[in-house]
Image (cartoon, rainbow, N blue to C red):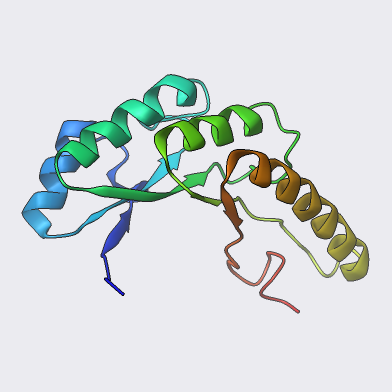
Length: 150
């Protein structure tokens, strides 16, 4: 199995595709987990055209893009740009999507009700992901997000 060093684009928000390529080459990593978020070069408003373009540029320079990370509130498969995002990922041959975070406050919310909501979301993602040949990933993040507090 070949190992790759993939960098999350989050801290490189203001860089163009060409700058990201140069940065990766200067620092010796293999590719990016692109943030598909407002204000980034690929965002919810342009994902249908920009994702394939940016991924193509990176691949032509020997970089890989195995994953994209959605906006923090990308949680439900029926959100406005979810289908567009997965279709763009399929077109660009990017196979991993990291969702946002299900916020959870144990003082305000019922844990098991929240578990049921998350299960419903994941069931919907499973259907959508199968249609576009994408794996949907959930990152457990912090003590106020579902997954880390079981």
